[in-house]
Length: 96
Image 1 (cartoon, rainbow, N blue to C red):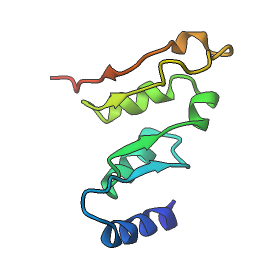
Image 2: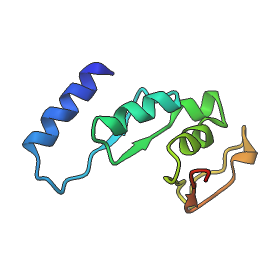
Image 3: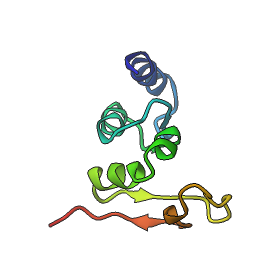
Image 4: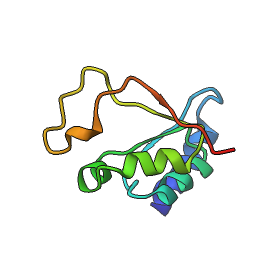
């Protein structure tokens, strides 16, 4: 992860300012997601962690408060974790 974050910083300096950076890979906890956001990512993609821990995406979204969790509307159903449901976008708001 440190190498990816370091490369991300170099890519941001070399890329146009309006090119967003989306982090993926190695995001297994809310702290991992925060690390990438702190390094400049505008979004994070969580994959493997949701298979191992179905509620992890919700934990990450809640931790990042006010962010949006998305899942492709026509994605294949998750037969192992049907309670994950289908959503286009779920607004997560930080507690007041």
